[in-house]
Length: 338
Image 1 (cartoon, one colour):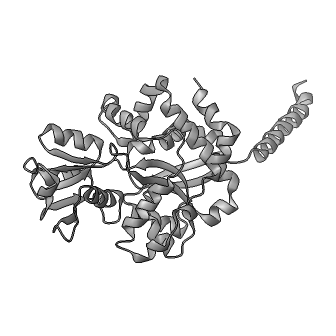
Image 2: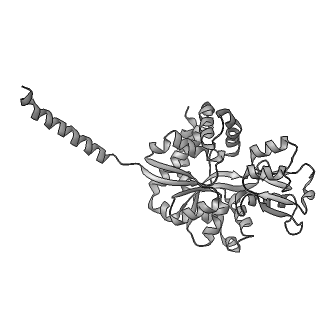
Image 3: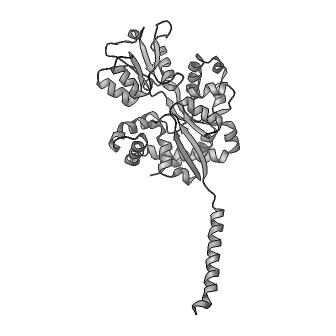
């Protein structure tokens, strides 16, 4: 009896296998998108959330988030086609664009500078910075450009007032340089500023509190990629915006802190509290790139690269993806979820 049924069993087994393979062939594989992040800051939280909560996968994307130290290297990778999207400072992009690369800024992750000019305890006012050394990260990056903006608002001038800007590394290195008196002041982000102020150092100028328009971080892609893959860009943008919705929903606070803690490699989840608050306070629910903020970036980068002066902010930005989603009611949908 068993021998008679074997061909039938075999037939249905083969049929099931063929059906499974057919269904597998019909199921589209997630499209791979490589995204380079130039800094590990709380402003990247929506991207981290979209990955950790599998929102990218929901939109059919296999997104690889790659941390690359420094905007200059990120821009080189974008120009070479090694990545499809850059999450970086436009200060590092505009020189590349002025050199002929067709790059579009399509989402404004951070539209104000997160930096504060923090000085030694003996420096009581802006005029005391004359003849002093000011620490930033790399020339042309956000901390460097923020330093130039801060000095201008304080009525100071590098050449006239003999102020020297020194590349002193990231926040931890700049904090150490202050304590070792290797520099007289430094551009520091929120947590580093709080730590140093508690130690007696003086915050001379907070760019975020001053509400100075400044395009600090953007999502950018080469124009040919955007033109060739509009659906991918649309789905990627939708996923990132859902990440924003998840971040701004206070009910998700603990889960968001876990994401931040993991990606910033903090010692524990509670150490993410300050970074969580920073993300909420410094990011916008509708992250349109800032035209005025981009103009300011162009202005200061042009002081080092005159070719940049001919760029027009309006021509670098493409807000159509966000505008279409806004008109569709996507923002309302994202922020109404509970």
